[in-house]
Length: 86
Image (cartoon, rainbow, N blue to C red; front, side, top):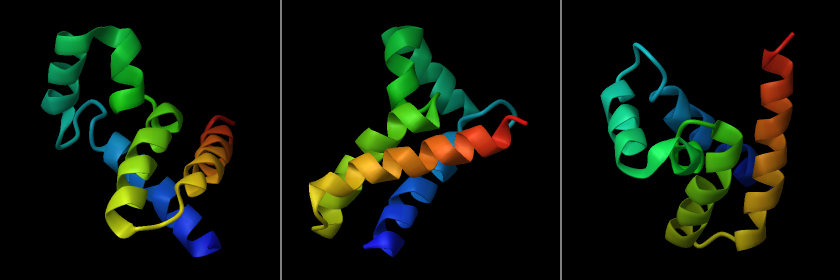
């Protein structure tokens, strides 16, 4: 269970990090923001705490894991975010 929660969290962080400036999917992240606006772009890839829920939800459906794993995965992403900001 812990391994699955950590996997969901780090998967979403990894996907979101690829949309940051000068990264591989930066243009895709900008395209999302241009289509849906900044408010809706955050849960789709600009904020990895916000997007952890949606990415985890999709991953749980695909991998047939319990859906409630999305909530602790968001908590792990929040802890990682707090560790990043010294």
